[in-house]
Image (cartoon, rainbow, N blue to C red; front, side):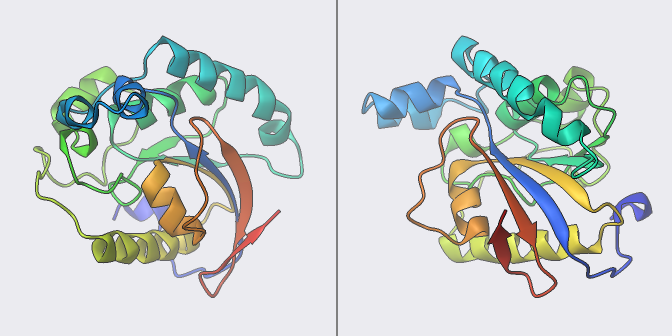
Amino acid sequence: INAEYGQTNLRMVKRLLLIRHGEADHNVLFARGKNSEAQQLRDPELNRKGKQQAADLAIRISPLIKSDSFNLQLVVTSPLKRTLMTSDIVFKKSKAPVLVSPLPREMGDYACDWGSNRSELERSFPHHDFSLLEEEKWWTEHELMCKVEERSTRFKEFLLSLPQDNIAVVSHGVFLKVFHTDRWRSWRNCECVQVQLNDDNTLSDL
C-alpha cells in the first residue's frame, strides 16, 4: 500500500460518506428482467440518467463536504468505470484526492462486475491515484460471498489505518450491503449514507 495512504495503524474513528454509483445500462437491463444481457456487459459506464443522478448528488452534498463538521479529506473509489465516473462528477469541485482501491469493488460474479485494464483507466481518469492497483489486467473468476465479507473487513481495516478522518467511499450495491452489515437494505443508485466507522470495525449511523 502506498505509504501516503496508510499502514500507520492509527485505529481511530472515521466519518464516512457511503455512496452507490449512478445508474449504468446493466442496472436497466436487470430491472427489465434481462439478466443474461446485463451480465454480459463488460464494465459498463454511467448512462445519461446515471450522470444526472451523480450531478444531483453533488449539489445535495456540497454543503456537507465543505462544512467544518465534515470537511472531506479523501475519496476512495472502486476501480469499475461506473464508480470512477460517479466520483468524477460528484466530487468535481472538491479538492480531496481520489484514491482507487480494489477492495470496495462489486462482487465479481459476471462481466458487468469485471473491470478494465489499469492503463486504460489511467488514461481515462488521469487525476485519480491508481497506485493500489497492482495488476494491469482484471481477474475474471467468480467470487463467493465469503470472499466479499473478507474484503469488507480488510477495507475497514484499511480505512482505519488512513491518516484522513473524513472519507467518501464510492462503491456498489452488494458490497455496500456487506460493508454496512444490513443485508436487507437495497441501495439505490447514487444513494448516500453518512456513517461512523468505529475502532472495533463496527458502523454507527449518523
